[in-house]
Image 1 (cartoon, helix red, strand yellow):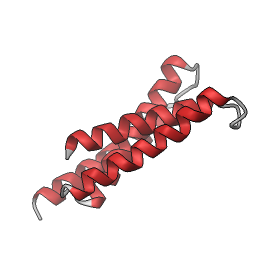
Image 2 (cartoon, rainbow, N blue to C red; image 1 turned 90 degrees about the horizontal axis):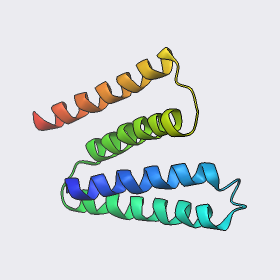
Image 3 (tube, one colour; image 1 turned 90 degrees about the vertical axis):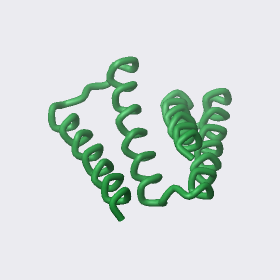
Image 4 (cartoon, rainbow, N blue to C red; image 1 turned 135 degrees about the horizontal axis):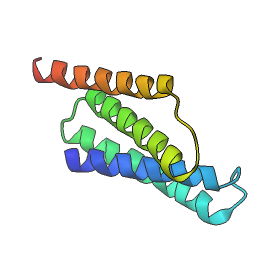
Length: 107
């Protein structure tokens, strides 16, 4: 099930970065990547859920890692900035997801 969740994260991040380059869906190539990326992401997420991953954990991990990767890719490769407050926010999101995961392991 983790294989499917990792696939969902990679596909969603790919789609989101392509969205940046689609220029409002006016460029065909990146627009196709956006649609395919999100389609594969939701399909892969559904496969993780079907295989028994709790929805709160799956969505939380997917969202937290996705947000973190998109922010880092934006800062490293696309010239976008990250403030200390934004970095702190990302850390809080990751901490919240870890709490969800640890709580699910003890339920």
